[in-house]
Image (tube, rainbow, N blue to C red; front, top):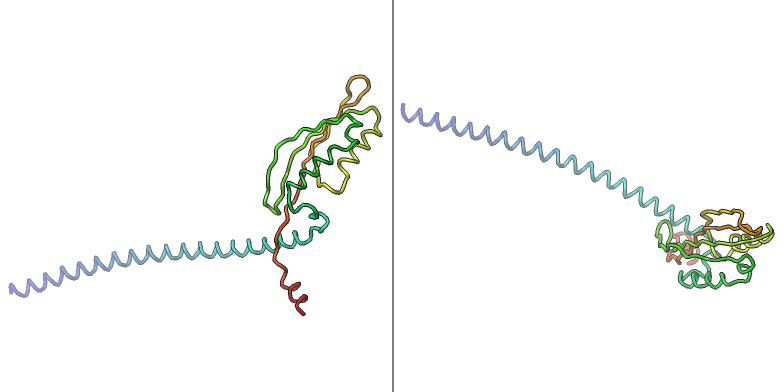
Length: 190
């Protein structure tokens, strides 16, 4: 009887160990299933984000390709364009209105296209509106240098002079190296 009790006890101990092992294994499998489901969800999110970014890149390429070539002509080197603008500031039209130029901050943006931005503030004085119109027309409405007007203020000064200041951003695009669109490459080969 001793031998039978020993075998039954051993079987009970082995059964208990098997049940405990089975419980921990099921618990580990459940945790691993949760981790795998979480990683699969994250993978799907990243795939969706990748597709969205690829579509955005295509849209930006289309936008860049629509930029007229005359806008980028002469701006392959942004420093050259900046120096040309400084030469432009030596024109006699600036002296007619006693213009002074102050250079502000400079920054380089890469989105959506590579672009050098430089802030300038022009102060000027005039007695007739014709002088002001000629100055602003000469500065703002010229087509060679892309300027963005940030602000304009005009106030009455002394001795019948009117004083004004205009803040502008000089935006010089850098040349982009783009791959040819697939349709254009096919038509050129034929």
